[in-house]
Image 1 (spheres, each protein chain N blue to C red):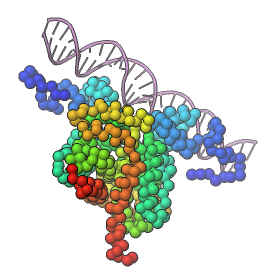
Image 2: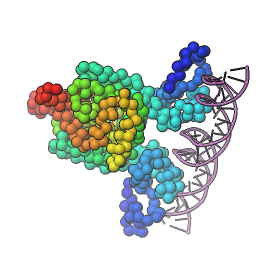
Image 3: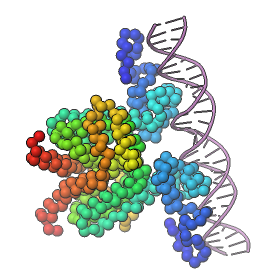
Image 4: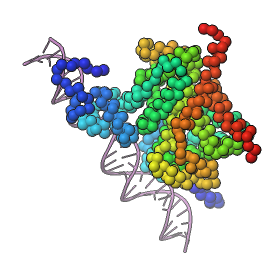
Length: 240
Length: 240
DNA sequence: GCGTAAAGTCTACGGCGTAGACATGTTTCT
DNA sequence: AGAAACATGTCTACGCCGTAGACTTTACGC
């Protein structure tokens, strides 16, 4: 991916001056910055071209089309996630990944819709490889921990399902910025007919201060203790 | 919303012949049908207008813009979900809702992206009311079961989070139609570099037959048993 | 320097959401 | 019945979008 020609004149600082050669990395990074700052809708070929000071059509050298561009952004974000498949304490590692991914989502909230919906239109085997890396690594973590491959898959599904669900949940309640969160939120709630939504309205204050990390951690605890069961079972009955 | 003039001449059969008056219901139903059969992208104002034999602009009498139309479709789908907040067995009810929602998602897979992403751009209090109904009803179910309101919210979040996560997971693996599922899926997997994705590739056969209902049920069981803890605790210590 | 391939540009097409003015149909009041 | 008020549907037009295809410019190996 990286050219390695050193001696001839070549600007090595990537995002330095005015008109370096484009690269897939530059394109994707700029795209991500755009999405982060102005939302998914702002990421159009024309706009991104403008952002890079290039003709929009030049982007097609680095992504086959807009969908592929979105996939690239997704991949880029997921690459920020560090997983240690060799951690001897698989539960601790899963917990850490969960918190890391949560923070990643909070850092790139506008990318989350991509994270959850892009895979819906792409068969597993055809997804960007960077997207499948976490899956492979977690499978590795779990099988090393003693799970049968099929069980590892089950655990992964339950775990990742819960994790993604939590992230979606949390982002849904976070929309307005934290400062005026309480006021705006209550204002929103006030719109609800009191007759039909008594409990939801009553929860206004509680909704306002949502400790996502704690809530996630608690859920993970419940899940992990439940999921570890087959492991203990197997260990006590066989001796392989 | 509904006019209640009965005695004068008025066609009561709604979706009868060729050129009845439009209505929000007709518009949304047609929109849903379109999404179900051809996907989200097919739902454009122009296409929907064509489908209804009307000028596209006429739709704006029934939805403020395209986003509102999508919200309407979301609401319509969620209305298919029946919740019984008075069920004395809250765990059984939550389990039933989970399976119902799963089936709903399988029936309208193209709507699932809306279900999970639309709320991300709308503060809770401003969502379509039909969207908040499940939340309110589940809160009702849980408080009736003895949960403090704040705890009910916690339980709801963990439960719904897991549920949505599972649905996303399952749909991601379902993309190709079940008939040639195995072949295509393995073909997809075959593309993966063997060096980097050994465990994922090895799981091909297991991935192919995914019993979503069972997997969901098992996850719900784990979660419910963990979530019920505070309830038992409160019951044994106080007597109110 | 020259040929070749890569990178970037230009033009153009069809489709999109929707603002605003307008036409048509229906209901209500007298 | 007639008129006034209103709801419903239509037309035209604008600026944006993704991207196909032909082209020009640049960079690099010899």
